[in-house]
Length: 424
Image 1 (cartoon, one colour):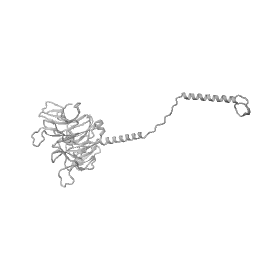
Image 2 (spheres, rainbow, N blue to C red):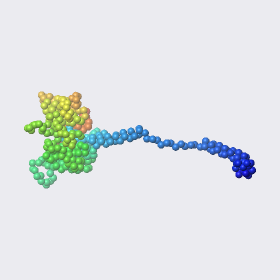
Image 3 (tube, rainbow, N blue to C red):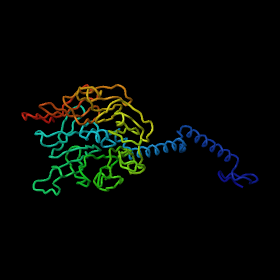
Image 4 (cartoon, one colour):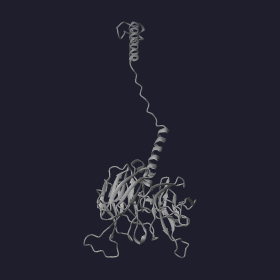
């Protein structure tokens, strides 16, 4: 047999290649493998990374974030807490102290104070705003009406107005005052948008409303408590006690009613119920005068000893705080503000009217302001107290710092007619 490569005869014919050709071929294969190895050593070998597995930590973080978002949304919807903290928005349009006890002539939201004043000629009523530092006074609206219960909530001001009859208009009941029209208004905080939400759907003259959690609470037909949405719709009766309310907070409605266990109608007892009218119950079995609600604590004037008391909303821990009748009491923060004479003793003949304050624990009493005459209300607006005063010649609307350290005049009207000014 011959070699298949060189043709040389192979003895015995057992192989296809002769010994010389076979050795040459093995040598070439070895050199080729060596060359391939050298090339591989010079190459940069890229290793593919294995995909990371999601561990338990990322899953836990996701769960925590989800729970946090749910909690934040729930708190915002129920309390308005984050709007208040981040944007300075009120979670309730007005406090009981400013409204029920003090007519609601002034209110605060964020860096603005909204307040009532007279017009330049003293013949109309204006709603104005001013920054809390006393700058940028602006007149928002001015009309021939009487205004009360200024609620500031979000981008709008809600208030009550009594208005006169239009020229040529016939008033059915001549016994009605010169302001027969009673309306709830909604006005943008820049004064450009003004809307009537409720036109006289009340038992008599309405002077007080509360805006809480996107609802407006008011006393409607038969002196029952009603609520409606912020557009004047979805009017809902809350209860049928026919006694109206004395205050609304972001949690409770306070109202007076006759005690259930009394056969003859005597003094009212102050009750509390939830915003939807559920769970009505007396607080401590008494009538609470000048009530203010801070959280779950009610501050009031006790008619038995003419002193300031506080009691938990469930009626527990009723205790005396301070010995004073505390007219027009208004509680804000750590202080109770009220009106009384300079010398509060019964025997005193000093008739100097003053704004007082005392801590909610009964300590640190202070006279904030001595007035020339007297005022019938004090509205707490942040670090300021809004009040009116007058001399023989002029009427003043002022702000005084809550600690009495500074005074800012908002409006002055000269009774003699020689000059008047509504500073803006």
